[in-house]
Length: 86
Image 1 (cartoon, rainbow, N blue to C red):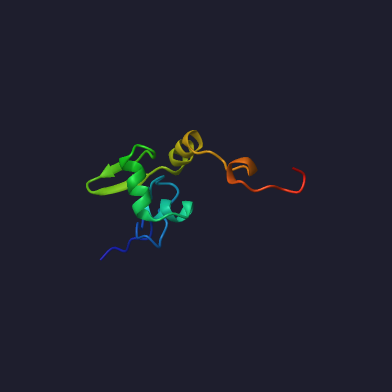
Image 2: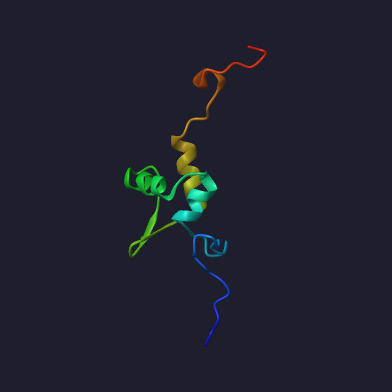
């Protein structure tokens, strides 16, 4: 029987960087979100994803680009907090 040493895709084990794809759980973990939120964002067109059968896979650089293009960075003005110099 052959043993697999690379390409494990369980949620607690990262996909090898050479493969370039992350699963939904890995993306959610990196972003500090729930996997359900990632699914919702894909359905809404906010995140690019590849569907392999019933599984979603992501390229991290594409996720970063999509978030950079659509997300705003919170500032003191948008959060309502002030720093000492303001």
